[in-house]
View 1: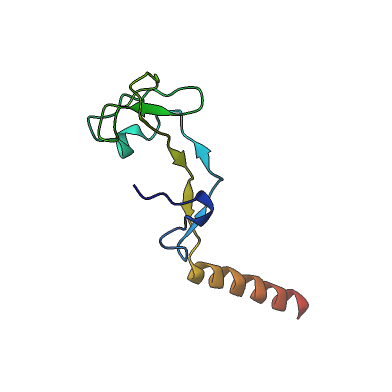
View 2: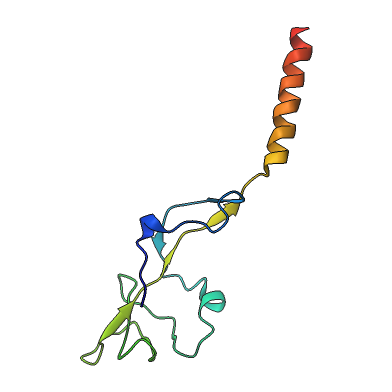
Length: 104
């Protein structure tokens, strides 16, 4: 299993996207239908957002047992699409033009 520290995770297209908020542990199940299309997920978590199982390909649950050898939790950070640079240029041009007209 490959793990990437949260501080090192980058947007794949940073010229088009920007972070909308900081990282948080998802305990709401709001992304379950998008992320967890597999049969190994029961949508329950413990109070810290962990799920437990015998193995990573096993059935996960929010209940830790003596047979729980692995655990996981989901971190989420939302991103939003940036205003395109051409739109920024148009906005800057309009502002510059408005300043020039009011100064003239």
